[in-house]
Structures are given as C-alpha cells and as structure tokens.
Image 1 (cartoon, rainbow, N blue to C red):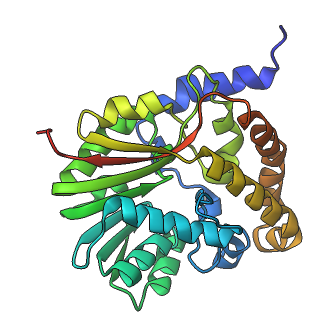
Image 2 (image 1 turned 180 degrees about the horizontal axis):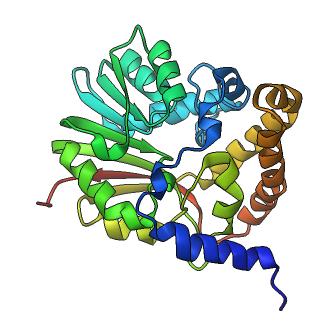
Length: 294
C-alpha cells in the first residue's frame, strides 16, 4: 500500500519531535491573538464558546447547545453559591461569567493569550470573575471546583503527569474537576495534529486511555460521559458558520488564516462521515474527585 509523503512527515514531526519538546506547549497560535470580531463569526457570540456544544436536551442552534453544555457542566459539578471555581483555559471568559452570574460562584479564569485575557476581562467586568493571563504551570490557590474544557490538547502527553499534579494541588479536599476533551481512537494516526498546527498551534490529541492512565494517579474518575454525537452536530454548525462568513473572516484575519481553515475543511467533513461508523467515540466529559487518593 502506498502512503503519501505527508504521512511520514506528520509521523516524524509529531511522533518524534514535538511530543518530546518540553517547552512546546508555550508556543501560542497567532489565531488566538486575532480581533474578537473574528471569533464572534465562529462562536455563539453571547458566551463566546468555541468548544463542543450539547444537543441531547433539545437544542437546535449552536448558541442553544453552548448554553445547554454550560448547564450540564454546572450540574455535574453540583455548583452552589459561595463556591470557588477555576477555569483552566478560559478563552474569552464565557464559562466563568455564566457560572458566576447563574450559580453564585466566585470564578478565576486562566489563559496564556493576551488578546483573550483582555476580551475576557471586558466580558466579565460586572461579574464575580478574575481573569489571569498566565501559563497553567503558574496557577496558584485552592478551589472547590475546576474546569478544563478542550484545553488538554495544548498540554500534550509528555506533560500530563505535571499537569494533573498541578490540578490536584489546586483542588480542595472533597472538590471536583470536570474535564472535556477530544480523544483519538487507539491505534489511529495523529495526522490531525499536523493539519491543525496552523490554526490552533501545537496540539496533541490523546486516546482516552492516555488521559485515564495519568489522571487516575491523582484523581478518582467518578463519571465519564460520551458526547460524540453532540460534537458531530457541533462540527456541522461550525462548518456552516465558517462557510457563511468566509469573506468577513478573510478581511479580519487575512488570507493566510483563511487558507489554514480551508485546508482543514475537507478533513473535517471526512471526519464527520467517518465518525458515524467508528466504534470508539472521541468527545467526552470526565468528572474527577480526590476521594480515596493521597
């Protein structure tokens, strides 16, 4: 069987080089510093959410699915007024503001992006939210609840132990962590990462067993929730938004960013079709606690 040269390039770059670079997750994608108007074209706008939504409760639009996802997260965490929560990889502050305004919790959001931090501070200025611009390694404090929403891709496998050890150090006794993450099927080649590098920076899509094997050293995993059908529906809405807003995105970000998007669009559509027949689903929530661990 003939294998395209891009396969071997991707295998070499991601399998042998980037996964071994200790500082690789400090490299920010330029996309994250684009104008906020650009992101409003490919998010739900009100909460500025870019991650997978939740359609199982009847949501029919991208925006509705994002609100339902936030409600589901709050339910899984059993949020109560007066609790403290830290959102690791808070983006534009949508989750921190939603949880503070609707559940009476005090929230800290963390992002390494200067542009996102500024936008998040403006977005949350009337809420009980603090936004910090820093790397996850610099996080400090103790919190009742922790959320990590589709941020683990930027940590990569060689840093998992350090990452989960840091998260454990932030969690109060009896606290809970909610992790939302995409996972690759076991044995599936990680070429998707090579395609995404120009859009999201250097990333690593792990298998579910990769995450569980590291996280279980620090937490008791009390619940895993498969949301792959919701991720598939989110992809459809995302593709529609991108195709509808092509001209505006090009004007705001320039042709280079659009070309990066355009190069990934066929692969996204292929993934949508392939997903229906795959036995292992790639998108899930995990709720973790410290009970029974020392």
